[in-house]
Amino acid sequence: MARVGGRNSWFAVPVGLICAAIVGGLVWLSIPMLPVTVAWMGDTLRRATTPQPSAAPQQTPAQQAIEGDAVDCRTLYPDDLWNELTWRAGSLLNQAADPPATQAASFADAVSPEVLVSCHWRFASGSISTTLSRVGEDAAAIAEAAFAGQGFSCATDDDALACTRTQGGVREEHTLRDGLWLASAENSWHPEDYGSRLDDNVW
Image (tube, rainbow, N blue to C red):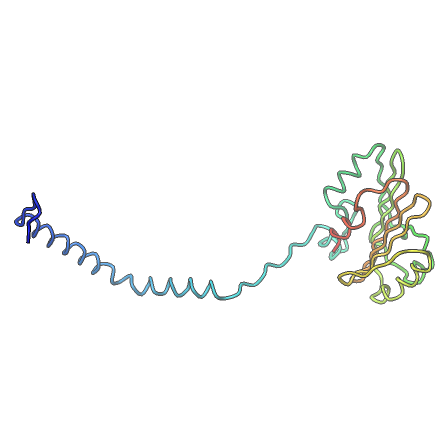
C-alpha cells in the first residue's frame, strides 16, 4: 500500500491518541447532562403535541364600563369613530340619560329600557343620537315584530338582532344582544358603518 507523501507516522499516532483522549473526555464530562437533555426533549415534544388554551379575548373599554355601570360617551365609541365625530365641522356633544330616539315608540314603551347613556351630537349639518340601554332578555323576542311593523329591515346574526330603516334623511339603527339595546338615529349625515363600528366596541 502506497504511503501518503509527507505523512510522518511518529507524529500522526500521538496526535491521533491525544484527539481520541480529548473526545473521550468530552463524552465523559457530558454524561451528567444526559438526563437533563432527555427531560428537555420530552418537555419540548409534550408542548408541541398538547393543545394550548386559547387566550381570552381582551375586553374593550366600553365592555369594561358596561360591566361596572360606568359607561359614558367616550367609552361607548371606538377611537377612530370618536375622532371622526369630534373633528366634524360644528361638532357639539351633549351626554344625557334620555330614552332612545326612535320612531318605534311602542317598542320602547313595551321594554321599558334602563338607559345607561345617551349621546346627542350636533354638527354644522346634521345630527346623531345614540343610546345604550339595558332591557329584559325577552326584548329581542318582540323587537323584530315591533320594528318590522314600522318598516324596519331586520336580521339576526351571532345572537344579535339588527334592525335598520332610512326614511326622510333619517337613518335608524338598532341592535339588541345580551340584554342590551343600542339605538342610533342619524339625521342628514351617516358616517360609514356607524352602527357596526359601535356594535364591535360594545360587544
